[in-house]
Image 1 (cartoon, rainbow, N blue to C red):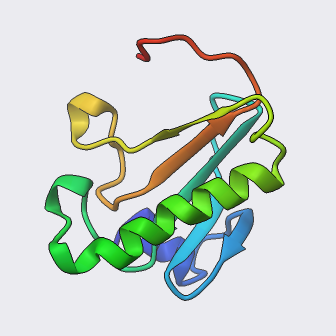
Image 2 (tube, rainbow, N blue to C red):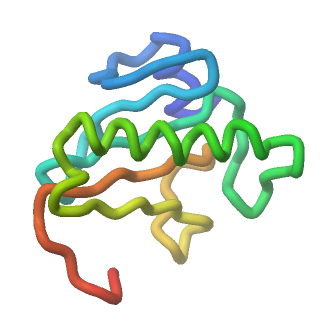
Image 3 (cartoon, helix red, strand yellow):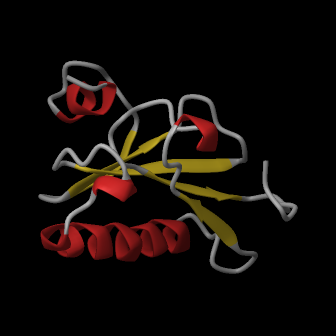
Length: 112
């Protein structure tokens, strides 16, 4: 069971900022910006490269909810970044797909 499955099952506490039947959104415990929220599908998809065509509903839902959460946090005015890491070289630390909403400060490009 992944860390995120334990959070979803309420076996591990987390600061939940949004939840519905498809996703849960929590504040990151090691934020890299003033706002750093993770949007996690409740269905276990190890990483985006392993998503299947039938996952399109949850994947689209994640993006729409990320935009809604960012707007509620006031990030729509200055901007925000959405990040999905895929594999260890990309910085993936939990093998359960999740999307980072990062904002509240200026960011450089390229990242990393």
